[in-house]
Amino acid sequence: MYETARPAVNTLARATSVNPALRPLRRRFRHYPCYHPAMLRLCLGFLAAAGVSAAAVRARALTPGGAAAATAVGGIIIGLGGPGPAALLLLFFATSSFLSGSETRDMISAKGKRRDARQVVANGGVPALAAALGTIPVLQPPAAAAIAGSLAAVTSDTWSSEIGRRAQSRALHVRTRRSVPAGTSGGVTPAGTLGGIAGSLIIALADARITGNARRVLPVLMGGLAGNAIDTILGATVQEVRACPSCGILTEQRVHRPCGAETSVCGGVAGFDNDLVNLGAAVGGALVAVSLAR
Image (cartoon, rainbow, N blue to C red):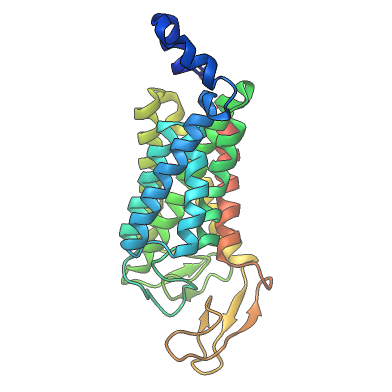
């Protein structure tokens, strides 16, 4: 099911083989690092990622720190992964930003619409690492599956959370089996579940369309759903839960936005926040996609 990697083409070298007049140019620049095609693609990837990040800051989708992290993560994915992973990354970011809604979404979520550096690394760190490992020819096929699987996982999780948060019905906590407000970590709603399936499916179909490999739809889809399930389980068991002493509401916020009171940890593992949960989901999605794509 894996596809054989194509060797990188040195555009300048090929041009000089066709036009002998360009050979002096080739001799002049052959010792420069940017002469290597991989380095050239990486530089162009960073430039493209910086442009998209700057636009996202203006659109209030990223904080300045988030833009710096997105430039690094996106540059690696675009420059080393190629146009396919870059398209999947943009699809995730565009749809997630659209669904995120207003700046202050509710009384539970720790962060608003604008993604910071930790969020960017949590969602994009795994595909960036896979893109870097994919530069090793023998690792390129599983790396491609890992990129798609991890992005399917974080897309599924984001769609599930945002759509479920807007549902009128309350959520069911998977550990306690009690009714909790929509948006609570570890809680599931019918609308959120369908949203998670749709988010994973759109990445799987886009990956198949881009690569022409329809056999990878199921591995990527299952990787996305597995990552979403891992996110829910971690959110229900080990993610830290904080309580507002003023409002008496359970939240993820260190300072409760509605009242300004400082919250305290009352459950879960202290320091294991939603960003680490998202990172675990991305890792799980990548591993499942790679194992099923063999």
